[in-house]
Length: 306
Image (tube, rainbow, N blue to C red):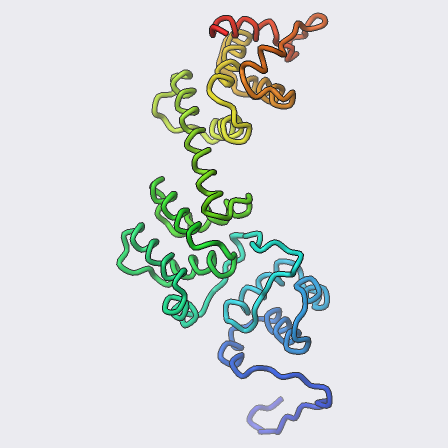
């Protein structure tokens, strides 16, 4: 088409039409194909479920979520939960909404809870004013993910106490906790209490191994997280597995220890008393790779005074 030769363009078939809000013209230049398709679909249908829209438009999950993120951030539509869905969205770090500056400014002025979150963040991070990216990240947690203001503030305090002051780390931590089911301040308190207890037990075990104050390797950290946080074993149980391992292999072998602890955990043994009460002699000659280690368990129990 020759744009120098001006022509009139008229839409046809307007006997069945739908309304497009004028404010879309403020951002239509920056919209990609998927965002435009989704916006027009919503204008035509009024409301629908996310699964219905994605299916009707033939969009992949990533394309659809990205389009939802853009349009919602631009306040061109709202997303609400279905009656049979949980209140909190399963958070994904890749689905960060980009909010218009006016939206965030309006929230800071009119929403006391978000204003409180921003104030706490600025104080904890030692900033006179949070920048736009910081505010956008916090508003994602508050508005899009739907996290409680007190919970977000608790996560900020936790991260800062660990020496982690980047907003990216704070957001990643909040999203990870949310995805694991920790969504309220009360749940966060319980989680941090368990974490503190586990760290105390880990410190005892590091001393036993002669690690001193050195940082754990990533592999060691995975073992310790599994034993002390996920299994929630105390120092005494892990020490018993350590004694059995050293007596049998003559070295500190975390792979071997891990298998012993996994076997105890699968058998329902949660304390040294459980292990002592349920230890038994192997029924036959144990092979070199067998984990019928009851003789070594008995020796370790005796050595430890149980």
